[in-house]
Image (cartoon, rainbow, N blue to C red):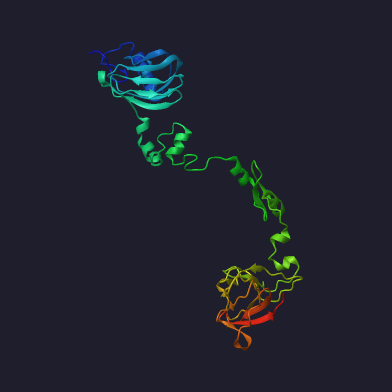
Length: 364
């Protein structure tokens, strides 16, 4: 009975009585084939655009290496045909050839290994329809450990970041020199972060004010800090209510005290107590006055008064609000044509009653 060969590796199966005198040589070749199948690394030199990777029966051949390192100088994408097409094969492939390598065994699927990449592939040995399959992309370990974070596609750093949901500029902030400048600053007490036109720097309070375009002095900025202005602040006596009215709990001492003067007009003028404390009017006809104190928000705890100067533009009457209480119960006579009278009014009842006095008569 003659010797036969294993289907996929070409190892000689020595029949009984065969290889007399050469049995040892044959056995050594078989053991070397096994060594290539289990640990062998073969350097495969490529040229042109095609190459045949052959496994020969009973002979050491390139198709028996477990690891294939493609090199050489192919002129373009190189198609490597695994022969014979009825052998089942498993290869670990490293492509250093400078071109892509296509592994094929028949008309079935092929595997392309880009230059610089590696792959683990098997050929199913199905003859004319034999297929080559890339195992690397289908490893259970890759699916369990990488696909959970979609890292199965890590062809480049940008793709890996996108797969992880870490795309620069949309998912995470890309490196920025200005942000780095802020990160490099020491968090010193009292230091402000200010842009100087090209980057961000840390500046002290006074310097920061200049950089921000503020020309006020520290005293001006702290104008409401009474102690900083040299006077005892006691219990912070300066307050402002929701209407913007500033109130002092103690006396006000001023070198000069000025009041705003509002000129009234028409025959139905309104004295708006929220605008001034002094009003003037030159009559143009019989005149009826209205006092509006709604904007002042008067309460029974407040005292408010105003002065009214009336110049008669002719012989005209003056009518006052019913809330005005005149001495003796009667309003004084209106000034004669061309004369000026001065009237003073004040209230301590929140505006429900006004006490009126004629402070000057026929002053013109």
